[in-house]
Image (cartoon, rainbow, N blue to C red; front, side, top):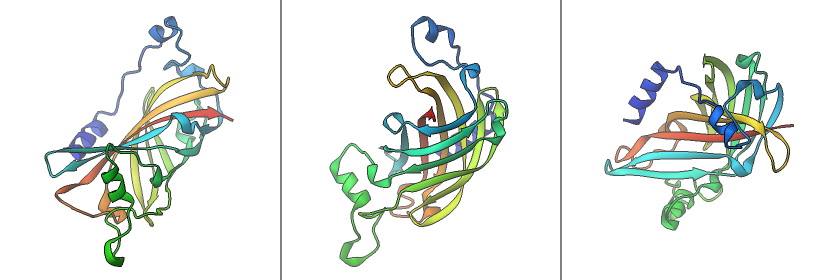
Length: 213
């Protein structure tokens, strides 16, 4: 179901831009106005960036969780979007879930010296490095790149939508926001515990803020 939804999203990748008028009238610092974006090098605002994940649990419902403490950089010129570059690091140990038992399972060592079911107690951070950006609409793009996770590297394509830009009133930094969606087959990164009862496909939803350096 998740993979089908992602395929449909790719087929209809033209997205409607959100009007910035209501945000401006309400005094909100950011607005979905491309003219506010300036060229340069940006760094992730780790305090306001999250990567959410969702995976089927026995076909009954879905597990939901978040990764935080995300870091990374973006090089962007709004006049040449397809030359943009992303380099993003996601600490696996930052995973947040609704129960202590589930987090323990994700990060615990394997039983009796065996390999861990998921990531183990000291997993390396995941890293995504873009290799291509293809503009799909006025405020959207398909970003492809290589994801390194759990000691393995493989290709990932992310649907990215520009969500807002402006001056952060707290630190006075020019800020640009995006949302990204993709689906990965976790077994390609060596995380195969419980398949197929626990879903093979993992939906990833990213909300990221970049601050100009």
